[in-house]
Image (tube, rainbow, N blue to C red; front, side, top):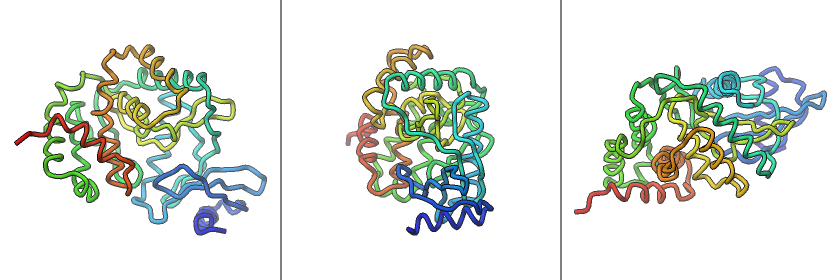
Length: 294
């Protein structure tokens, strides 16, 4: 038994799931330790833990996000079996099928989420977590101010971001933030998943799209769209973007906005991971027009 599976088995037994007899490590996650546990009756469950949790509420916030996406947004999500400081236990989903039809169904599901959950303000009633970093969700009436303060500038204080971006880069980001009302259209807030890269899209037993690992808030729908668009979705996903744009009435210029909106996720990656998979280079490329030439 590896250190990973030993940790998860110990946490499960401590939490009262003493009928778990085996744990196998799971792959795909970046921030936490995860595995597939088998209970005494043969039922599998998915389990996730941090060696040292970044906060007492990290899994409670994630469980809440899964529930609200399902109950308010109509999205399929795994059932929350247990969520406490040390452990998150969920029902098991399936890998997504590699079909165009699946991505068409996801387009309908995400369009429904974004068009039926509009909210007068930007934020959420509590902070939650993006990986191991806190996502600040303080309410704001102004979407541009909210995005600038809590989704972009918020990352400048992170040690890895300070190392990756020089003073000119940081000044360029501040100038971009000042110009957001010129660069992006006015959009309403709606419920968003908040961390919607392709790895967080799975499938239910009957093949419906299902979402995991949320960092929910009420903000621009294009935060979710940008994350999928810029994180190498599979070739069959091309139909998703065309259909989503049709269902939600997106203007033709939406693709041009994706690098600006995705700055938030690139900054989060820089803050948490080394190597950063090219995130710093992408940030600098997007900020290039906002750097002042001496």
